[in-house]
Amino acid sequence: MNASRAVILLWSGLIVALLIIEFAEITRVFTIPLASAVGDPYTLLFALVLTTVLALVGAIFIGIYFSTRVLRAQGFTPFEEEMLRMRSEVQEIKRSVDRMSAPAAPSDPDPPPKGGRP
Image 1 (cartoon, rainbow, N blue to C red):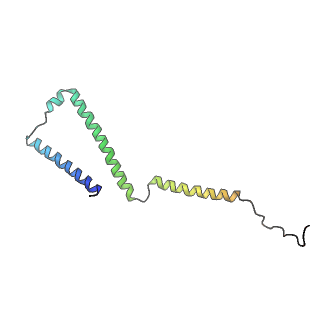
Image 2: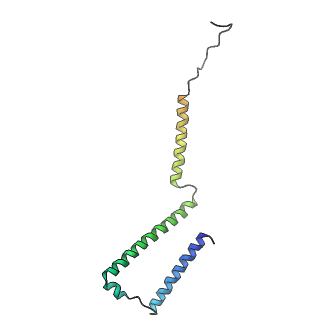
Image 3: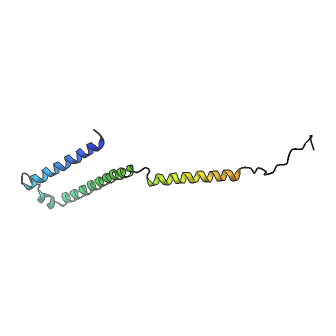
């Protein structure tokens, strides 16, 4: 089983479990004691902090998942494209510096003397 199928099954199971809990709450099969949670401020604060932390962590993971899925469909990320452009610019500058630093060859060299030494 590949990872995406496992993730889909995990989320589907979580949604089904939450629906069962909600249905049980509506039909009064069981009830959550909200009076004790509201009556004790520390319990309420703990519940709010825990819910906030879990929501942030979940949002971060979902954001990472979606951004990798979106960027994977493209060839290169914008950062990689910029790095490739910079690489080609650096190579072009290096070639021009090499051309400037090469010793200038005379355009019309003097012919060697005939018949020996001058």
